[in-house]
Amino acid sequence: MKILLISPFYPWPLDSGGKIRIFNLVKYLACRHQVTLACLNETAVTDFAPLSELCQDVFVVRSRPAMVRDLCAFLAGSLPFNVQKYRCPEFRELLQRLLAAGSFDRVQCEFTLLWGYADILPMDRVLLDAHNIETHIVAQLGRDCRSPAKRLLYRLEESKMSRLERAAWRSARMTLAVSDKERDVIAASTGLPEKVITVPNGVDLERFCFRGDRSRSGGVLLLAGLDYAPNLDSVRFFLTEILPLIRKKDDRLAVHLVGREFQRLDGLNCQTGVESHENVADVLPFFLQAAVLAVPLRHGAGTRIKILEAMAAGLPVVTTAIGCEGLAVRHDEHLLVANSAGEFAAALLKLVDEPKLAADLAARARGLVEEKYSWERIVAGMEKVLYPGNGERDV
Image (spheres, one colour):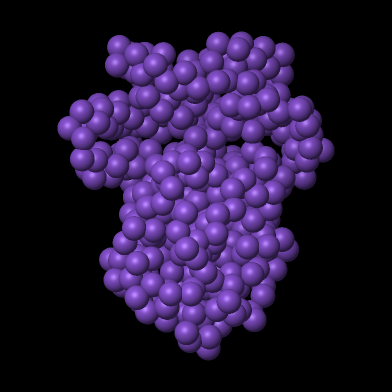
């Protein structure tokens, strides 16, 4: 089949969950199909490798942020802010040109954030890969916001995003949800359960090879792109509430903060014992060296790829109920779940102080990802439904 896959960003390097998902979908779809990739990106992309080696064609349109323009358009129009900011005349022209010139069998739209282009897409061929239920994230952030003015903006965004998401789920040929829970929410919202399937997030089992010999000297790994509001909140929560409790029991446990946009922390990461690693070329060495991964998320939707990668690599995980939501994991079997600051600090210290417990959790977690979360297996199952051949199902 000929596939046009459109993305709100160029999915390389693999420094965010969204990029990891899109890259792996492209990688395995391209084994048996002709994939054309069209993306927006905030920065210029001069080298399309390795995606140029996988795809038939790659197109990237640079789109710079324009907060004031997008906010004004959001307040005056019907689109959510997080959709409005991805509207770009040059990208619209590119899509129109590609659709007119190419007889694509499927158009795979990554994120509902690109639904501002829905009016030019052939809905009978559009697959919407939702990634998240965006309305849930906005609602959570709005509830916890202390500024009355910002709370009003969040409520307006939530209302607009809710309308747009429901319309997108109804209009697309098929919607892809990352978990059964989100699939059920989408099906109930539209009354069209036949138009939504689960395509979970996965992990590259060869890249994230298992390492079982962990040492407390590897410390705690915090992995977060802080341009994503739930991640910023989680790192603030860790540094201001969880870490002080850890320091009362252990004042030497190292913390490695890996990610991007650290200036948003206003210096919170400049604490003794906290090492900041910004915009690293490869996160894999940190997964292999750390003693435990901390994912203290208090907001979010979708599922966390970094938890799956940690489980594949043999890195024990402590997270919240929201952090592991949508994954087929169980507390005290595959990872530890802790929601309050006190519980979280205690769980982290327990894993670094009890290597046998940590090793047992890690071994069971690796078994789970091998069984359920290999990208190769996930895409193969997705193809049988959405990209059929040899008499398989066509939806």
